[in-house]
Image 1: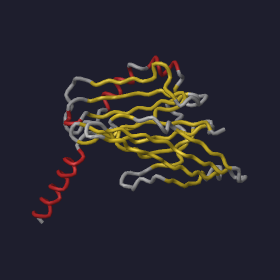
Image 2 (image 1 turned 30 degrees about the horizontal axis):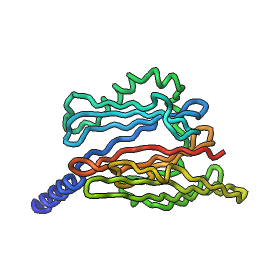
Image 3 (image 1 turned 90 degrees about the vertical axis):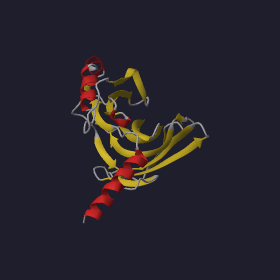
Image 4 (image 1 turned 60 degrees about the vertical axis):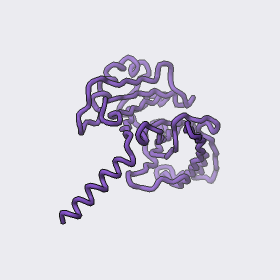
Length: 229
């Protein structure tokens, strides 16, 4: 029994060494009442438990772009203790962004309707097929990505080919994202969530990015949006 416990502890230690870096926490902060704007955040503790950080993003849904002054980032000099998740950093940045939240009328109770989620431990797929049981629409989402690496740099691009088949059989196709845009230090992408805006006229894709870090990889998030109606 002692040898088995020791082996388990070694495996957990090796897993941490192989991953290193840090994994951000994602939070859906809601849409405006007219569904024109969406806000999300990510927060955590820098690798090696150095400092807590937080980021807030406000997105113009129809433009699939950030609003003016819609990106807020902060790293706090207070040393993080083991077990902390960076929640304090998020709350501090949130408090300092109240004016922005009011400007775009973000309603934290309106977070949209979830259509797809990649659960922790599940194998990510590049091709998704699922049905919206509320409307009987079917979705096919194909994640296409490419990595461009040299001995010194890492870059990766991606986009989504989206097909929606309505209850009547009518099919609509969308290209979501920028196929030619290479993000520096990004190694790969995964689709984490897909949800509809509260007015159900737009889709939001939560994308997980695996970023190169000093001692492994960091996990960060971004969104892509598309108006479908």
